[in-house]
Length: 112
View 1 (cartoon, rainbow, N blue to C red):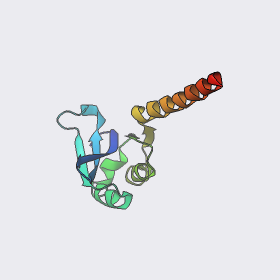
View 2: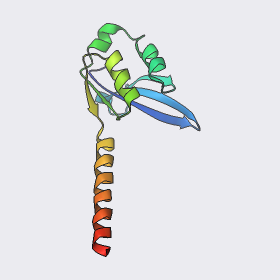
View 3: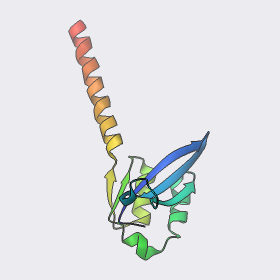
View 4: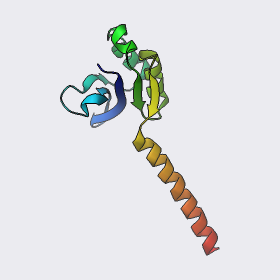
């Protein structure tokens, strides 16, 4: 399974969401897929991931996830020893949105 995992949701077809658990070591190549669970409801995902041997899950040191509370809960319950890390994409998105708001605010102040 690996010590560094990524948990994310994806829409593989219209209105069908899945939660994907991948091993970051393999960088999206062969061997990276750990689990695919239909849906994103935390309780359902936790139920499926907890079928993986506890010893393997307990060896996970880090989980990378977005900022959704459901993903944080999944990580906490399934991988209790893992450090939770927010993925770079979502951090950059928040920073750029904040910068954009500041830019617009200053633009309007300059116009007025």
